[in-house]
Image 1 (cartoon, rainbow, N blue to C red):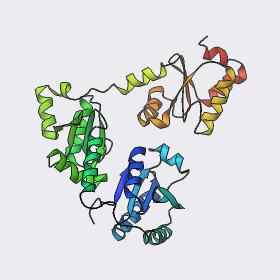
Image 2: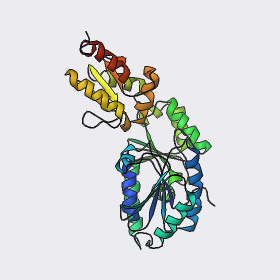
Image 3: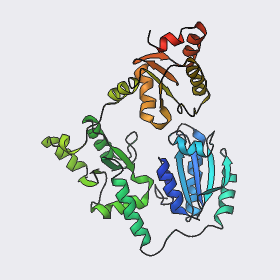
Image 4: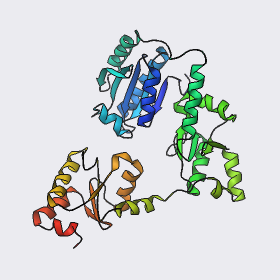
Length: 329
């Protein structure tokens, strides 16, 4: 079978997920909420690939549960693998756990009433062009590649990621292996037959050879936007307010028990503080652990210095020192 089938899609963001549900309409969409570290999820991906061959009118979606928390929380995903079945944007069934025979049975049953692909004639072509336009303008600098910056899936993509990293270029990326329609459509749209492709402000710069030429001529710095280093970003964030709490969720809605407990303690002290939701930014979530040498959340900072997590805050509250610590005394 081909490495990537047109009806198997990797979803990495909430807007992409919502767009997909609209696009598939009344046809059956099966969503696999997974974790890359879980072997049972890898096994179920193989099952999904087989089902995709049998059910060409059904869309199969792979979605990393922790990477897209808004979607996982909306549909109350608490373990992996979990499968949700959609029609017309609504959940019509659910399967928790790695049960291949049960998954096959549900797909067989639910797909039997599924309609054909959405749209006929020229309309999908127009919709695709709109979508491509939106994608190439999704960030000031967009890289269309095979795989992701963390896991490039071809030598050319690996080389271009390294060049962008070495030159501190700020960019977003799209995995063309996750969407055959985009993969083929963008070649025509941009009149550029190969990947990777780099766009700046919606305009095509070129592929790997062009980027290499820009490096050699010294023009790359003026062509592509520079990234703010992660360390600089983290420093700015922890100093954004004299008391900063990095947590899952925010002041209005904590999204884990530890964050909820620390909010209750902070609110009881009556000191002003700001929060940052680490679920909204994976780079900050992982980077701050290394920066502060503190592996868990929540994390509390006062005047740019790490105080600690929930246990430390509890100890300070019990000893009566918390108010003075928060005031920086």
